Length: 304
Image (cartoon, rainbow, N blue to C red; front, side):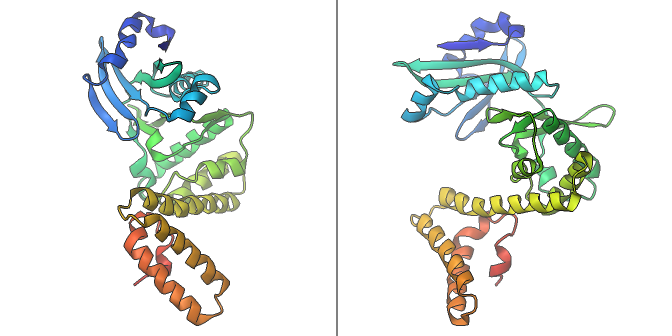
């Protein structure tokens, strides 16, 4: 077993080393899906333990010999974010367990952060949230100017806090996918923000504020960000349906839908063909895809 402990919590090393054996029995589940998060009291320290899903055989080899595990990256990047002056849940430790020389289990341990995710803010409206959104834009500018690029900059990975003075602050979670870059340009920023907002109005507001602070062209920045966001959420519809829909033939339905759309664009001048294709697209959309079209990107084409 390999354990790295933040020097500030070296006094808890023995207790930390026991976490893999007690994880199944202790604590309250915070999240349980691909990975499992539990909130645990560790000798008076309120912690969250993230147990990463056991990797498949190829990744077991990769994480054992060629690349840092998700747990180790979470620890290292959290320390780096703190060193740059930004908030993350306090990094405490990481644990890796091996079986026959290959990584089998990994855990990341951090302090509990009581902040709420920004999901409601990003999916809502601008009106009444101007202060929060402006604060978020300013925070993101500072993050990027420091060279920190969170590669999964999505609402569930950003927590918001309101201080006693009424000011809003933010912290990052799930930072195992991150880059530290010397410079982050406009195209990279807009690509990075693509999964942030279901609301195009909210994304437009944030990007205008962001562009003003960076002295970039506001309208061009907004246009580019919306382009990447629409692209992401359109593809998200197909991925989500293929993963979550219970139909045994959902993948073939998705492929046909995309094929029909492509052909219809080629034969837009042929009304009969276009009409038949549109009818089939509409049938597939309303039966399988509409529930995942959170941004109503495809809906205008298939209104009943």
